[in-house]
Amino acid sequence: MAIHKGRGFACVNYPIGMNLGGDPSQALVHATPDGKFMVTLSSIDLGQGMKSVTRQIAAEALGVSVSDVHVDTADSDTGPHCMGSFASRGTHRVGNAVIRAATEARAQLLEAAAEEMEVDAADLVTDGSGNIHVRGAPSRAITVADTAIAAQFRQGRTLAGRGIFLVPPSDADPETGEMSPVTCFAHAALVVDLEVDDETGEVTVQSIHSAYEVGRALNPRLVEQQLIGGAWMGLSHALFETTEPVYPERDPAPLDFNSYVMPGPGDIPDHHVAVLERPAPDAPYGGKGPGEMCANPVLPAVANAIYNAVGVRCDTLPITPERILRGLRELGGARPGGWSGGNFGGTGNPNGAEPRTGSGDGAGNGHGDGHGTRPAWMATGR
Amino acid sequence: MTKTAVTFRLNGAETAIFVDGGQNLLDVLRRGVGDLSPKYGCGQGGCGGCSVLVDGTLRLACITLAESVDGASVETAAGLADGPRLHPLQKAFMEGFAAQCGYCTPGMLMAARALLDANPDPAREEVVEAISGNLCRCTGYEPIIDAILAAAADLRGGAAR
Ligand code: FES
Ligand code: FES
Image (tube, rainbow over all chains, first blue to last red; front, side, top):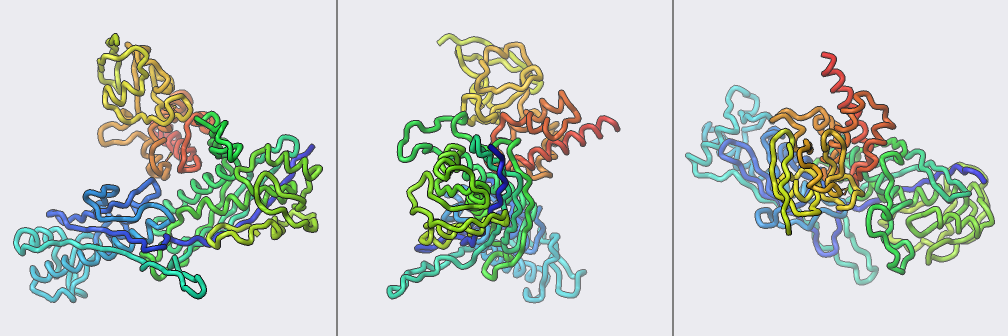
């Protein structure tokens, strides 16, 4: 009985948003009488940081400081419609709507300032810290606060903007079935190193090395946080979590946190994250958003690493010690290096037998695992 | 149902309330007193979201009988800040991005508070141990552990000055 080391690799092309009939988000922006700006959304921040990021985006587009922008989320009575917080679409869709709303409000702000200063609005610029001045002449200035007061109490002008971002519905080409449901992709590649105990079937994940390409990281700390937390969730899905331990039977199912198991603070591996930035042309200041992609590649990478460690190819999640032990029994013992001899615990096609690579150089040998038909957006192990 | 009068200090303030027999402390804090900082996650001692201190000891409010805190001092995350001044733990959580949705945060803060009260200079493993009864869905725990260690260092520095 022994501990076997394994390394697994996976990468993902992750589509931002979904669009099988239009995928809109909307935003409203208005100035308060003291020259602050309110962004009103019905979009929901579940903790992923949408409030922080839309605040930064609005400040950038308005030309004011972040501290002068407030974001109200999650109320569909007061905020215009948003499709929702899913499909990693928050930063991209909502951010674009916010830029449009803020741009309209900014135009009104500059017109109001121009009227006060008796200059042409086209000659005015903002300094990002509460002042509007004539281009090239910073001393010919008016504050945003004074402009807001003048607009609302003297000029009778609103400083407000509406924004919607809609990727038009994508219909399938009747000839080919081809469609363009998304406008940009984020990407990730990830290596998992782990150990499998061939006596107990237990898996210990030692490290994750990941590279995530997220467009511009609009808030690098939030991005890193989401990547670390999301990878943890991916590990949890790969190795622990299920409501259907004996699918399709619903009984026994976990009813509480004693039986619905997740890794705790003592089970986290080292995670080395590299964030790559390739700003997308249609993304708000280039930011695509990490979203679900931070969890997805972890699952196939773990499956590949287990295959690399002991030769057991599991295609049913989570990969529990029981499934690994069943696989080991079928193989007649561990086959380090990833030797494909069967298909365990699931309904997929049997693996094609493959030559044993015998080296721990990454699980680059999972071609015959019967997954040629998986959708393109799913993370695929190699 | 018979009501029992229970008095306790909640974050330093004298509090008196009638409770039902068998009513748990979490219910009394949230619905009776209106302190919403302890969270209901599971109601059966499995998630740590309802963590509070009773006479300085970490307790899960959802499985603590309200009557049992009669005469005791109860501390919740709502009492951590001193007016506008955040507690070093809160500051470290904020600066270390240790909260995403924030649902686990009050419980984590109280578990950390109990640890640092007893052990101002914990090793990383001791921090892990101290929060191992608290579930977090979002952060992957790492930033929480880092924030608690940062707060410990901050508190030690503050005491030395
Ligand atoms: S609510 Fe008390 S431990 Fe979960
Ligand atoms: S921050 Fe969401 S549960 Fe911990």
